[in-house]
Length: 284
Image (cartoon, rainbow, N blue to C red; front, side, top):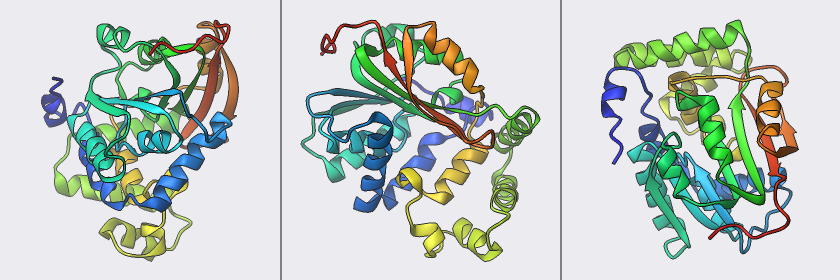
């Protein structure tokens, strides 16, 4: 079993799973539908019947659940034990009899990755840039895609100086006490949501019942929990779209979908198709 508690205690890693375990209390049918829509659009289908789906760094488990709702046989894994626990809890609440397994594991564990086999759809949204070794994580993730399969990933956009500034904020957050962390989150919220009403931002941080707080964001997520994940999310790496294109092309993948954050803050989304197959089914 992976034990990353020491990394969390020393400030070298954010406690991602603790945040996602809190988030799943908000998951309902509206959020699940939004998650299904966020998968179906880029993949070009909401029907994954008979296909295998691997969720690399499953976090809350919401997108594993969405893939199950789309008909896939699902496997989820995450480095963080609390994320795995959150995923299992979500499965028990909404899909107790599903063909869906959730285990702990690291995408940087080459031996463990090799033992997983290959999948029709491999999904890793906002995960690989938090491993501490983005390009190795991308390489190992690409190996999990079956011939003619799809790889759906998102990677933080490289903003140059601003990205380096956020890296310092994240590092400071993880090496600070509770009060300093709260102040960093509040300051970041004021900066990121500076065009919103201050009352709405404060309500979000207090966990209030405003529409801004309770309504699902894109992908079914939560503004409050996404903010904490953003400010605390460390390790933290970034990449330019052209770097990702070139890296995946060298591994036999073709771009099928792209959504950028227009050069700004956040993740660029990519769907690649593995081009080294001839329609053969995925390894089971």
